[in-house]
Length: 564
Image (cartoon, rainbow, N blue to C red; front, side, top):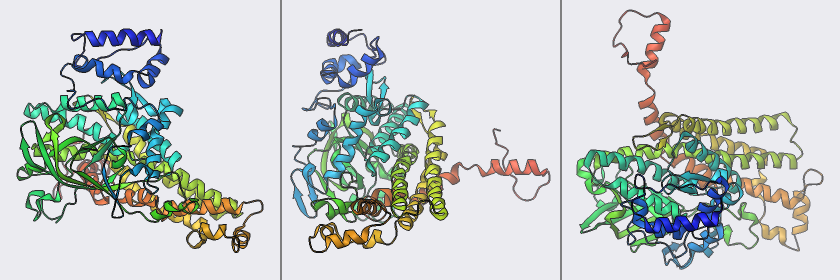
């Protein structure tokens, strides 16, 4: 019952014992559920506990040389997380200039703030942001958790929508979360087929990430070059990340990954192949965990619409001055990866499965857009009220349509998670068909929601003078006079809401809300391919023939393989 005594005896036990692990994983629980959650997630020496346990706590557990304890220890707060990003000497370029400390760069800082909110959610709503992990025997951040039940899969969606509501942007951790879950299954399957040791390596990596509460970024999208040709047939072999050398104890990677969300804000990058591969593409069938500060990595920040507004002093014209997204191009210049961090190497037949399992998670992760949509619908309703037209029937109808579209996104993603099933590895995976239906909705509905928001905001959303004009002693008072609307509405508040609508529909955060909705986790055609494969039209034809009383023969009859 005493948390302090529990930790004292547990640490002594782990440090002195090698034979008490179960399945290579230490499992322990305090009698008090309150103490259990607090001790594992927030105990002053929780990270030391993991470091002391080492191989004894995990059987063939992590090698200290491969996963050394980070200097910052276990991250317990948003402030500690931000601090952990400093001093890493990353090669980062912003608008052609090398940036020594990207955390403080005004264009990059909003993305750091957005990801920091994932840590703050642990403090404000631990039941939403944390989960019990049997891998390390304690509570962990849900973004680092491998789903152990249907409820875990559903809880991811609840967390994602909540963070969308709180940040109004992409918070950049879903790719890593989904890479961990997909990799857990695929490494198990590869081991079963080839007798490799990938799954044990992968569990060691996940345990390390969970133990120190780290951020993982996923890296799947390659430049691709000529889309009509596979990786090995490209004129430039570096169009896909590949193994250029295999040395004793590891591999060397070269190439690039594009559109990488939140990579600068991460601690590790998990590289994955991005498409089906043939036997001739063996060097491209690589998956591995790489520290973001590994030698040979260079990061180039992508431009976003209106991004230089973040350089302006008052931040009003940004629309969402505190939170923003981040995409980078990652250049791999002969990056060394020790074999302990390699989870796929040459097993080309599993590349497509890794992609498909990853997208099964990631395409229903786009319920985060329903959280951002909640904020945009709120802005549309607010600007209608500020304009004095919130009771007009056509305004109500537009707000209802926006809500209908937004909730449809949520409903299909939530349904995919509710229909989750266990994988051969023991973790849980969402329904693949419903996940793709969810993402296909996301490629369309945010655009219509954004159109209706602009409709309700009026043309001033795109023609309003700058914040500097409103601050001018000469013209500012007159501008505020003519920006007034319904009685009692502060023109500065109206200006802020209009800029927020602009930000999400054509400004900086439209990258995450619109373009990312179209192309993230695969463009619309990719979802249609999966939907076509899983639709089971033969079964549907059979239903129709039975109900219509068909008994004759006219061409090819559907196969009677319906299970119900």
